[in-house]
Amino acid sequence: MAQEINLVPEIAEEEIKKGVYRRKTNVAALVSLFIVVAIILGLFGAQLLLLLLEKKAASDIEQAKNEIKAQLNKDITHRALVEKLTRAQDFLALRNPYSVGFDRLVKLVTDSGVVLKEVKFGENGIVALTADAATSTELSKLISGLEDAGFSKSFAGAQLTSLTGSVGKPYIMTLDFRFVKQEAGANQKKSTNP
Amino acid sequence: MKNIGGPFLKSYFVPILVLITIIALIPLALGPIVVNLKIKNEQYQEKRGQLSQLNKKIEDLEEIDADKENFELQEAEKAVPSRKELAPLVIGVGNLAGKNNLLVSEMKLTPGKVATDSAAAAEKSTKPTEVATDKEKKDELSFKVALVGSLENLKKFLADLEEAKQLLGISSIQGKLQTDGSFRFELGVSAPFKGIVSGGDAIAKPVPKLSDSLENTLKQILKFTSYTNVSVPSVPTGVDNPFQ
Image 1 (cartoon, rainbow over the protein chains, first blue to last red):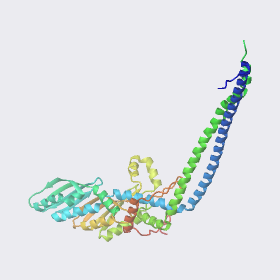
Image 2 (spheres, rainbow over the protein chains, first blue to last red):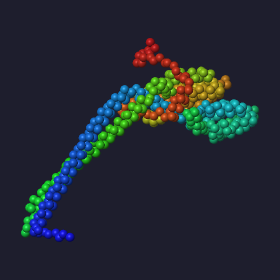
Image 3 (cartoon, each protein chain N blue to C red):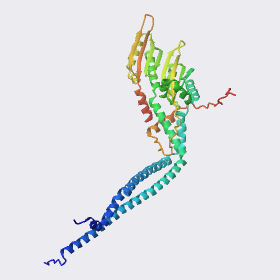
Image 4 (cartoon, each protein chain N blue to C red):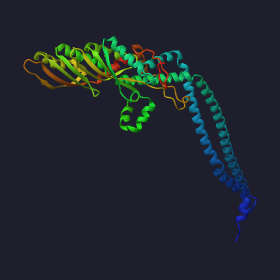
C-alpha cells in the first residue's frame, strides 16, 4: 500500500484548500445567480407566450363573434321559440282540465235525473252545486253517483251543505266538493308524452 | 485582535454579491413577474373559456334549421302571442261559442290586466296592493265572458277551448238555470302572452336547449285548432275619428 507523503508544509495546504473553497463558492454562487436569472427569463418568456396566446384568443373571439352575428336571426328565432314554448308549457301545466270535470258533473246530474239549478267552479277549486230532486230516488242516485269511481277522479271531499224538502215540492240541495287538480297534471303528462 | 472582516469579505466578495443580488431580485423582479403571470394566465383561461363557449354556440347555431324554426315560431306565436292583443282573442272566443251553439251575452275586461305597460306603471304608484296581485299574472290576459246555452254545449265549448291554438285557460265557471230552461254561464278566461326579452349580450349567451318536453309542447300546439286567426284592421291613433 502506497504511503501518502505530504511534501507541502501545513500552512500552505490550508491556503490551497481556502483557494479551492473560494473558487467553488464563487462558481456555486454564479451558478445560482444564473439559475435565478434563467428562472426570471423563463417567467418573462412564459408571460410573453401568454400575451401572444391571449392576443390570438382575442382575435379568435372576434372572428367567432362575427360568425355568430352572421347567424343572429337564427339565434333570436330560436331563443324566442324556446321562451314561448316554456311559457306555453307552464301555462298548460297549470291549466285545469275543466272540460273533463264538467263532463263528469253533467253525467252525474243527467244520470241521477236531478235538475241542476246553479253550478260554480271557483278559482280556489271549490265547486258548489245547487240542484232540485223531484223524488228521493233521484236524490239517492245523485248521492251514490258522488261515490262513483269516475266522478271521484275529478272531484273529492263531497259535502251536502243543505237539503230542504217539503210536501208537494222538490228537494233542494246544495253540494260542495273540491275539483281535483292533480288530474290536470296527469292529463298534461299524458298529452305531452304520447 | 486580528481583524477577519476585511479578508473574509475580500475572499467571498462574489458569493456575497450574488446573494445580495438574488435577495434583491426575488421581491423586486420575481414577485411581480409571478403575480403578473398569474393574472395573465387567468385572463387567458377566461378568454379560452369564452372562445370555447362561442365555438359551441356556432356549432349549435349551425345545427338549427332556420326555415323549420321560423315556421315553429309562427305557430308558437299563435299559441302565446308577443303582445296583449285582445281583439283577436275576443273574436276567437266568439267563434268558439258560435261553433258550439252558445250565445255570447256579455264580455267583461278586467281593468288593469289588459292595460298597456305604461298604464300599469302609472297605476303602481296609486294602488300598490292591487298591482302586486296583478304582477303575479302580468304575462296573462284575463277577461270574463257570459254565454247562454245548454250544459252539453258548454261541455263541448270547454273541450274545444282546451284545444284552441291560442292557449286559453278557464279560471272560474258560474252557471245558472234561467226561466226559459237555458243556462247562463259566466266564465273567467285567461290567455298567456310572452314578449321577446331583449337585453344583455345576446352574442355571448349560449343557445337555449329545446328540450324534449318543449318539443312535446310544440307537437301538442301544432295539433290544436286556431280560432283566433283573424286579422283586425288597425286604425290611426291620436285622432278625433279613427274610422275616417
